[in-house]
Length: 258
Image (cartoon, rainbow, N blue to C red):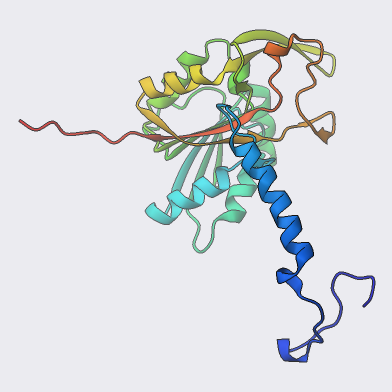
């Protein structure tokens, strides 16, 4: 047997020489039991945000594809979406005939850069304030942005007026910690930001009639590598570890019977 993982090109399974017990062998079973034991241990953790599953990309393309499949189109508001980083992810993920309307809300300088870059693309739009001439969006997405908003409840309330089916928070600095504000040092800038108690976010979304339907850990890339938040200079109770992903769905209205 060679040193390569894959060898040879064949037209059928019958041509391929076979050896060993493969997935029924002792080694595979032993390693599988070791792996599943670790997963069970993690699953028994008493944490609001589970350590598994973990993702290092936004789940917006997946949610967008679900809506597109149901409605034949999808309309997204990406609050704090930069110069449209996830637009290409969503567009490429959609299969078949694509009907995508993607709106980014950002600071004016960022919007100007985005408009220049996407000049001529009919699928993406930039706004330096919440658009007043649009009544609804299928999805409202906030990626690594809510914790930079001082009046965050007011912002979420304003976004909820678009009556989205889904609210998706990606890379949200929230977990089983107290809510507190801190200073982020960012390439010579000092930026205020929140760290959230995740229950506070969930409770507020519930007040707006949005139900949490998915939660997971998000793996951030900090200083060029994937890692937990470096917070050794904080007391343990204030250390987040890793941020999270939260997906909320609009609660259906219930009709009262006489």
